[in-house]
Image (cartoon, rainbow, N blue to C red; front, side, top):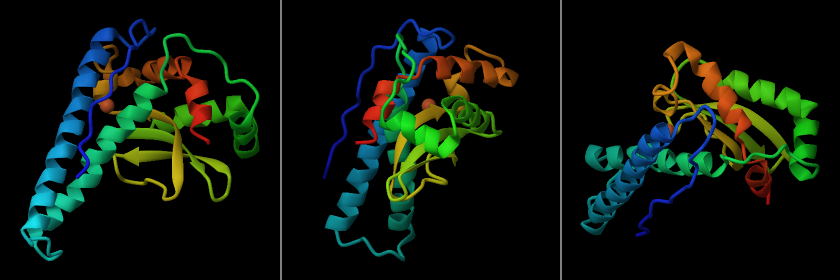
Length: 195
Ligand SMILES: [Fe+2]
């Protein structure tokens, strides 16, 4: 059974996303890592005991819950990985070309991504690389696990749960958080996800 270890990030000094918000957010992330490991332990124990019948509600609920905890862990890793305190504009290359072929321009892409971030509810805005079609697709992910696209790699991930911005902004000011996030995207990290 794989045991996941929490990652660490040095992101202090972001404009518009406070260090205090980040510290709380790192703690929440570590909760997802802990609970993913705990769920896997329970699932493995039931399997070892021969109690892994799909009709068993206890086993079924554990397995169903895994996607939520696991994606809660993994999406936060994508999110913190694609933030930087010293951002640079996206240069030419594969990601730039992909954004151009899928959205017409970087400006259009950013506008669409931010608009999806502005949707009501808690969840994530994610730009996926559909490797099968070699296209970029922007989607809203409800919770952590509703609307994931199969066979696609997350390229840009923005957290839109309220814990990501409510210490820094009022509930109606989500747009300011989105602006801060977009200003701190590490495009080099995003481009590296296409490989
Ligand atoms: Fe979060």
